[in-house]
Image 1 (cartoon, rainbow, N blue to C red):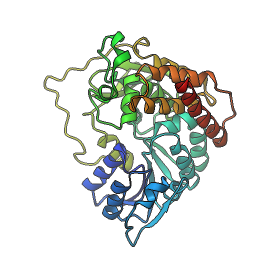
Image 2: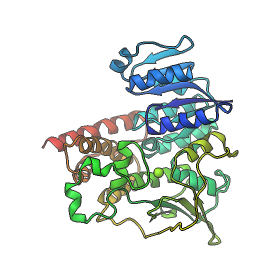
Image 3: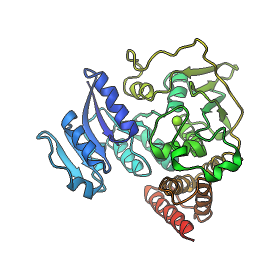
Length: 379
Ligand code: MG
């Protein structure tokens, strides 16, 4: 039985982790659950999985919890997630959204835990801190994002170190076929209609701007120790080829499967073993796979903006991620246009002051970038 501490249990990925756990009850046990504020779903989960530890970050939400299982120690408040991150588990599965994941990941690593990471903002903002701490403590950082899981599989679960190029595939998101002039007037509801995947709201908007793919370039760099000139992005509408690795001899190995996150989730928990029938088999009859070139920066200006910030390194990626988080929230609540996301992130990046790389300085960068977006929004 693998003991899992699941951070972010009420979100889209968290619920899919629990669905994998439900399908293989003899393989996994949930020993800790952490969520932000979805108290009623969380209370249900506590009684279903009876974890040793359960934590809610939001204090007001925690006050609305009506009952706690006898076997469960319940914590709440800003740092409560650290109880779950450092609890007695074999693996810490990080499915929380945003910068708050970084603190939990660093704590889990310091406690000597392997970490399955589905929170890309953590690696974007703090990739250097996370990977150097993991190396120092001898723990594994296991990819869950479908693209990175594909690369990890092609690299024999990271055992192959020599490659010529990592090739990330990109579906192009909800507006890939929309006339460019129409992007100014699209609604949040339209942005949330991803052609292939059903995911959380924030990441679905990040797919429509392709900010998500810029983040994934950063993730790939940290996870596979790849310089940016060895990472390419190609358009691939169907999201069947999840990503590829090109080897020095010219061979390319791709991983294909239906678009279902349960596959990379299960593999992160059991590799090198593969479970039976995690997702339905891929049908090849009539299957057509299309590939295009690199992302069109006229359609996806955020992609270039964020990728440039990522390539600048230091605290720029952290600022880009924080600014984007707030700008996307403003778009989702109908306060700005879709095209306004770019303007606000660019405004925040203009104001970044270079900082050294510590958790504390990243925390400051994160807060300043959020503030800059609100200021840019109000003026
Ligand atoms: Mg992805």
